[in-house]
Length: 70
Image 1: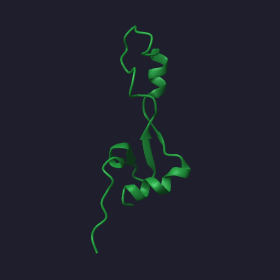
Image 2: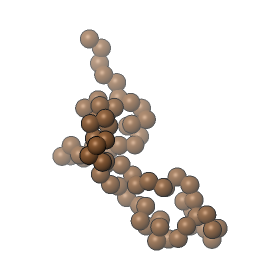
Image 3: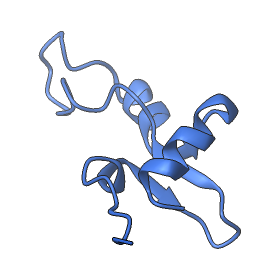
Image 4: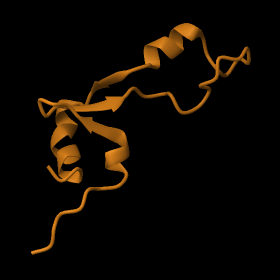
């Protein structure tokens, strides 16, 4: 029987903690990420709020683990 393969998109999105929980980056970081004075970039407060990781929603954990081959 062949080996399971990890989904290449999922491995770039999710991180597994030591205890087995799934973490992901917060949303809204892809556009307007520079700290310039243009109106579309947002305030420094918003950028601080978007920084860091958060837990994957409980409803999505099963599907995400399947994509990761766990």
